Length: 261
Image (cartoon, rainbow, N blue to C red; front, side):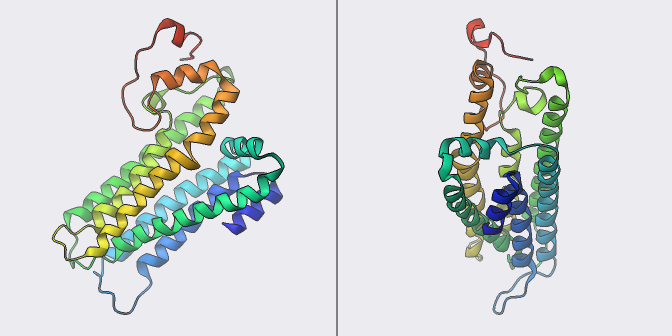
């Protein structure tokens, strides 16, 4: 993340931070899944499967952010932080990214715990984990594509995307990002108690939720949206859940006035 800080400061595009973070977490997860460790027993088939899941997630997310960064300007979340921190932005960004480095460590431990589950044969939890991660990747991909399609239409400039998944959650991409980390939990957990390390995997989705909902995800992005979209975004906030998908709430005509479709 120190490298990501240097790249972001020199390029002026903070979007590179998340691309580097995605690739770094994937690389660390793959290593922790397949590198042999003396004294650790594990099944022969589970580590490469878990490593492949981590690789697919990392490559899809990382490449998406790379393309977005190349085609656009600064990430709106970091633009908001730049506005708030002013001249102290470089220093505070460095330490902010160290928090994300700690998150990467915990997430990698989730992958480690899943891959090192010593149960010999693949269990129902392994297959369920694969299904969960596939759903998460597809869901996040659909959300990203829906938002990109909305932005490509010049008529939507200045409006708020509430089409498709964005009408069920204000941040469906974040929801599916978090959902994917549940895959490692169900792969790692052994409810018989024979593999206590499996509970370490729970730290991944817990920390990811905290990071997305309370730290580097929703708060700075919504602060930016309120500044750039004003009452239009406030009406969207009144109708649609921030994180958990659900049916939109009915609002009064006064609240909904000016809300784009």
